[in-house]
Image 1: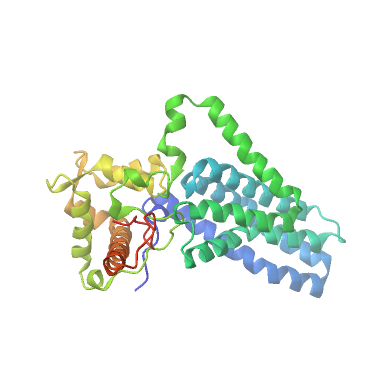
Image 2: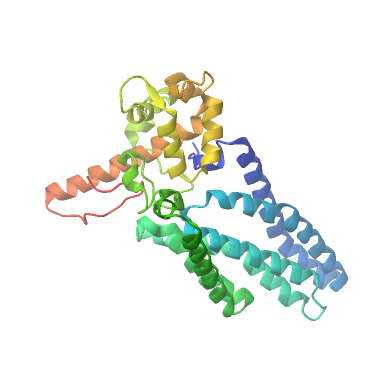
Length: 334
């Protein structure tokens, strides 16, 4: 059985549609690479330019708008991620525009620059996978992966000065934020997204995830034996802190926001679920209408419990553990 993806990608219809269009756009552009070189060496620059025009139509029509829309749900430290992603999207649009105006002599060179910028995200995920494999920097892993990926890919695509521009964009964004925001806004947790060091303390420890967790960790054996309704009940009972058989819409909204949904998306999702406008969500509503949430949350709860159990066994056996250690699910040691 496939592992559930992060709820922020699927709980809101508009975001699902944009994600599918964005994935389609990226896949078509990946196929465009072999098509470009086949056209260039088989039919000459004119044929290769036709491929570039098609790629530009897909890029400017789908990829750039999709990237800007998805920016509102960026993982990690948002005051770094927003300017970083804006810079990466601008660099992508610049490289695509440069490709359309390239001379025949520069066409292959400019295509390779565009190709490298297109694959910045792949480099980010490669760095993230390496950090995850060795369980390094769990509390800010995705933010650092983005910065390291940009530092590797951008100079190769657009020259060494390109990463300096990225750093400047982050600095300018933060200076503008600090100048425009009042004291309360500067301290708000809204400048962070998807757990990590920034707002893990605000969540029930069962549901804390490391930055950038896109696919849920595998269920432990105990949870795999449960029926879907039992898994949903496990999550519901942990969220129902008052024990009255309902979940506060506000509390569930905070969980969704902490996992990376913009507040507007979280509110829209919960408004659909809370049909009676009571402000509380019962188990049947939760089970039938929020399956992406409880499926992902059950895997996170299961993983965090497994990590805590392993750390407890280590402590009891005298093996010791670092007090701030985080496992697959990102939960701090008990």
